[in-house]
Length: 222
Ligand code: GLN
Image 1: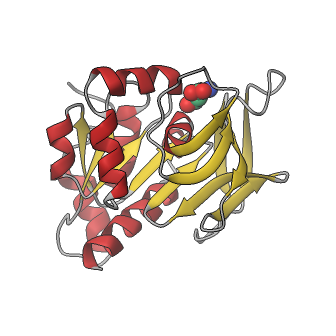
Image 2: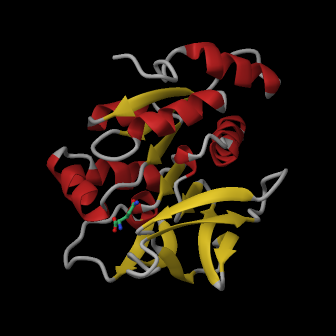
């Protein structure tokens, strides 16, 4: 399989980023749930942020990970596939045990405790104390881009791509809001869980992935 950016698992980019982050080797292994969505783009961004990135499809693979990314796609489909692949319960257990997980777009929905405008019985992983509204920005603005000030990122505003994106409608006290569009939270963190309404894997700006890799490293050292 050859891709323009190279195989995400090729360690070159990860090694370079690891060196810049002042660690001598690739010290974290982060999975990308590979049932649907922008798997390769996330893997590439993780490698550029200094992690080893691996695709994950089986429950037993979860035990080998220091962190996991749930990519965008269709949360109803991904939820159903999680159940079919026997991953739903193991993932809930892993989140409960503190595995760092980053969900983007549909991934944010999957991490939410509850969803508005979802399908009835839509399976969620849960763990993040938020209620999200699915397809929240409505038909007129199915997709849009915005420059966001994101708490915890240094440098210029982050150019963010929203595609039929959710927003956070309600957040518990333990949830830190990292960015908003208007009054609506679109990037949040609670403990080892990180979620964004947007798709940072599509822009070539790896700062969100770097933030997640840092969270994973901090947990490893805690
Ligand atoms: N609208 C999708 C959902 O409800 C999410 C879209 C995305 O991940 N880009 O799952």
